[in-house]
Length: 469
Image (cartoon, rainbow, N blue to C red; front, top):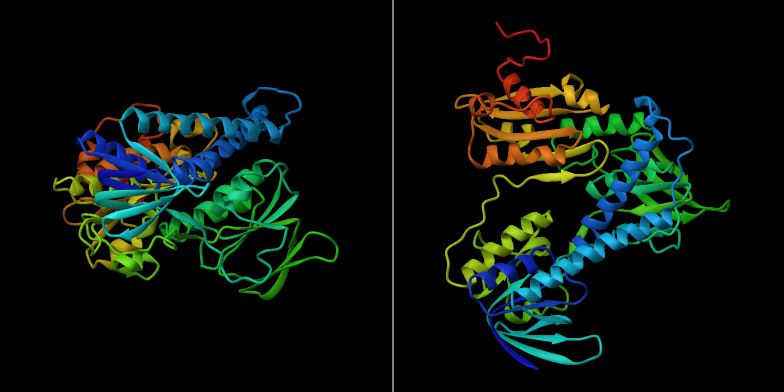
């Protein structure tokens, strides 16, 4: 089958399918190519299924600790098979929703592997061997990424699994060592620990969630250790081997020298690598930036009519890929659009949750401008106390001269929801006074953001703090 279109999109993840829908809204003839399931990694084996497991973990934790609230629930247990079944149902429901949106918007969907024959022609090969040729005025590369496979001896042993396999476990191990303390590692640590698994995280860099503000990483380490999760930072995994006594031995090197850790299973969560192999990018001369496709702020590659978005250009979040997808197709269809990365929120759904937007304190200071920092603990927030979730704080980084809010960093209850207000503040170049003069409902968690903003000038109401002279 030969198909002609205005825009062909290779990859049906949150960048690709959102871009396809936007292109259809603009009147474009659109072909969407996906080799697996619509929704991509995020919906099928990433963001959504992991959050379904995290939700189950949170509910189990709440029921287990209900006596603290005067509620006796008797013996609380869990059925991991049922938890997995619900996770699969959530994924299927949302996947069906995406399929309906694609069909309802008149988008031609081809299920197969796409590769460039030249800059205007994409060949699509189905599993059964049938091929299609798509002739497109413009093509968007949105192929996403897969699990990184670092060169660690023993990585292919049966007792070792990655994040995708972790989402499909039929039974939980008694103990697990997680190699990698980034977003994926700490979310799985939260899931496992909630259900009683003994967890050790090994992170090569000096802090958990090393891409976040350093203060957030230190706070998460403290909270994890309080709940029994062992944390080894500045520690490198050298080798994984099967133990003579059963289970797995992991040789690591860290501040205490070289030692061997033992657990029933080992999970590897050390980053992701972009899917570019087999696309034929070298055939059409697409310029690369190491492993990633190089683009400008319009999502254009160096080849006219070829765009790229999401993981293949190094973007870290599904929501960023969605925004990039809209920018790419708008430009492909003759509109003028540019990507603005100033206010991209980050969200990590560990316990306690982490969220951030804008500049960290370290990055703000590195710009050379004078800054002020405000902090407010959830121990002083009424709603957090009511919830019994007082771990963590909100941190605001502001320009000292103009009081513009440069960044907001949170660790604590439901901060992945609270970050939306902060993202708007950063995007709108709001000042400290803009937030201070916005009345926040009481008692609510967002009051902590207002109080942290007040604390930029040592004016927080609900904490005692020595005022500056």
